[in-house]
Amino acid sequence: MSGELLVINNGSSSLKFAVFTPGAEAEPDALALRARGHFSGLGGARPHLLIRDGAGATLTDEALATDRVFDQAAALQRLLAWLEGQAGFERIAAVGHRVVHGGRDYRQPVRLDAPTLTRLEALTPLAPLHQPHSLAPARLLASLRPELPQVACFDTSFHSGQSWVAQAYALPQRLSESGIVRYGFHGLSYEYVSRRLARQLGRAETGRVVMAHLGNGASLCATRDGASIASSMGFTTLDGLPMGTRCGYLDPGVVLHLLQQEGLTPEQVARLLYHESGLLGVSGLSADMRVLLDSREDGARAAIELFVHRLVREIGALAAVLGGLDHLVFTAGIGEHAAPIRAAVAAGCAWLGLELDPAANATHSTRISTEASRVGAWIIPTDEERMIAHHTRCLCMDPD
Ligand SMILES: Nc1ncnc2c1ncn2[C@@H]1O[C@H](COP(=O)(O)OP(=O)(O)O)[C@@H](O)[C@H]1O
Ligand SMILES: CC(=O)OP(=O)(O)O
Ligand SMILES: [Mg+2]
Image 1 (cartoon, rainbow, N blue to C red):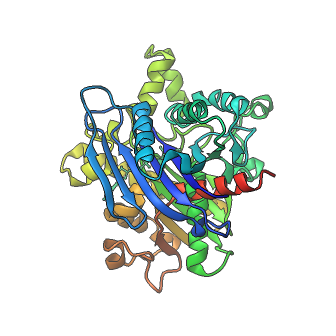
Image 2: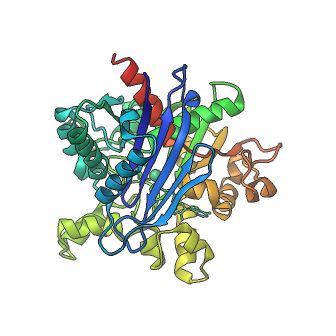
């Protein structure tokens, strides 16, 4: 395939993108990064755009217009204008999108045509913060360049081979059969990190691994020799760990209580659980871990304590499912950058045989456990965009 690959990773308040040139080999590492960009603070008071070239040099670093709401749609228009001015939109040969939910029907990356887009849009209630933002750019691009191949890469695919028992809820069978099961998310990140860990260890048999993707959304994934065994996220992106603004797992009785006793509407409950809970709700201060770590307020400390407690508890549960733990891997914004969080989690995992190397942790080294540690602890920066570019390349070169 000649031409470049555009990757769009659209989140609830951010849009990340990247441009890659495919190499001769169909390997993620063979893709040459041309540029990487990040629109942040979308829909808020301080939208911002940062673009770097493949070598990391800054191409654009600007505050975006605040005289009107700068949202995902505005970000996409700005991205297209930038592409025109740079390599030229015409040189883009295919576009890969991160789509959070593939539901029951999509277990692998898929070419996006009109019926597929419609089917994926129907999954919006299961990932309301993500699904619409992922699919809107695909619709716009399809209208601007109908001949341009577009590919959807799913967060859920990596987990689709889990055993039924890892996926099932203890609900009547007809509900499980209708698709109310655990799907798991952040799969593109886990797929990439898992490959990097294998590279670090020099073998594909990575053993019993728990990966912690700790960003705005946060989840854990247990793998055995690279295959997903269990995940902390379930049917929707609300489950599992507390996140920036999401509550994580909750007694379903709380939802019933809010609806029946407190008289909240379903929309109010959704707003509470998706947007007003998690680190933001507990701290009463911020969803941003940097702000919480810098704060001396009691709320900030409580939010961090709860976040770490739930992480340690869930890592223990996944270690039990794996029958032990060989490696613990940290990734995404908090996992890659927040040394105090990693230190607290590692302390809570000492009973599993994890011994942290504090100096390596403080300097964000790749391996952060001591030589003597029975469990290896690692920081492996994620690259969802590279993984999406890889799948897009594979699908557009070989439609089977
Ligand atoms: N240096 C840092 N120290 C602590 N937390 C950080 C740091 N840098 C980023 N983070 C946290 O990472 C989170 C965002 O992670 P990221 O992976 O970029 O999220 P997403 O891709 O889901 O938008 C935020 O909570 C942010 O505070
Ligand atoms: C699935 C999910 O929560 O994604 P993100 O971390 O990008 O919000
Ligand atoms: Mg993310």
